[in-house]
Image 1 (cartoon, rainbow, N blue to C red):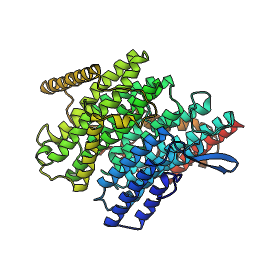
Image 2: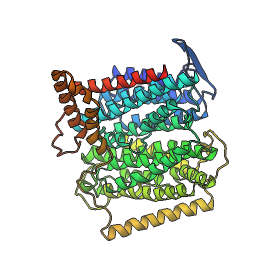
Image 3: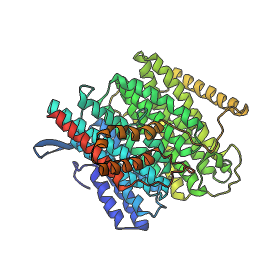
Image 4: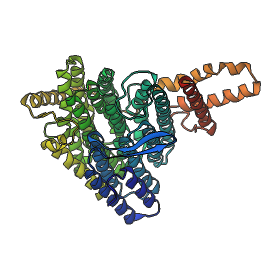
Length: 567
């Protein structure tokens, strides 16, 4: 076993190198073995362990361990292990190398003790994860990956600008409490918000996650957004703005998820809904609320991963993922259907399932701190998530109308991975004490108070009753082949025009240069404005190298302005 202060990301980076030069069962065994050993090693690392070094005159802490980072470190190892088991049947070197690199980058970010180290792993998260989208090797996946990469790299650039300004003001790069005090901290807050899917900044997730491979989406759902939740919990606890941002995040995705046909996109919206509960808890900032946010992140990785795995299994065996094309699969996929129902019960916060023991903490904290309107929004969101994830996902995939599809269960490794997740969902729900023992604060909270159980049961009962009544009356939104426009339409439509206006001074300069700029901006416009759904006339448009050049130029100008501001 390696030294106690060995950074947690190193074993996963090393195993990705080994995966590059091995194949088949040997590769799978190495991946599982190293990730398991890394998790055991982390379990024995005490809080307070740290590694410091000097770099270009800066004192950095690339590895710093406390109870908050350990909590995320444990679940990231569990997620990586389950994800590798789920993908053992895959022989694609790209995915099996990118996945541990991605997981390792997430571990590097949460154990970073300074903002510069955080920035390095923040960008590595983007670079390593995009290959899980491109690995599907379709035009839609390629385009979604490009958009994903642009947004994620932009988040990193904003983070870099923010930490430069923050360091210029405070003289510290410590990755601890920051708060909203000055333009530097606001930039850092915005960078975290992009990865956390704040409202109007969320479309990168609903755009890219459904286009990834069936196994890649499982990894994607576990790391990027949860690293952002961790970063907000460390740097901005008690920031009241987060209470209202989180409350909005719990509510608005419900309306998109209910009308969405692509079931993996439904789960992407559902993921934003669940992150909203975490963000709200962080904003409330009390010990109970932060415990609720962190424990819900822990549970969400498991039950959302289980739902993504069940839909990935459906996609793997049928080649279809739209609710309108599915139905009746319980006849030939009963095991997958049952495991999916466990995930649906967990995300819906049924008592004795994992979601109940964490979500109730955030809602209790909201009441205790006097956020009564926010509590009502969370209550509405709890009913809504039961509709779109608790009922819609298993109902339209496995029941509803009979699509006539007669398939088999997915490969055994997929079933094993889903079974492990389902067992964890039930175990945590029945015995929450061991999860609570890992939390940053000891609050003595008991989720199985009669009031909590009765209130949640009533919500679920009346929500189910509403679904049945709407369905029988023909009022529930049907599953249709359609395009549902989200707010990304705004910036796809108007960003290129804004860029043209910003460069208006070029129009009076050299004619050849003007023509060249107009040509490239038109290409950029066609790329951003194109809807990536089948049937779109611009679906064959591919981004050019010049488009990437223009993005690089804009980012360079942005960095120059920031550095000028600091000086």
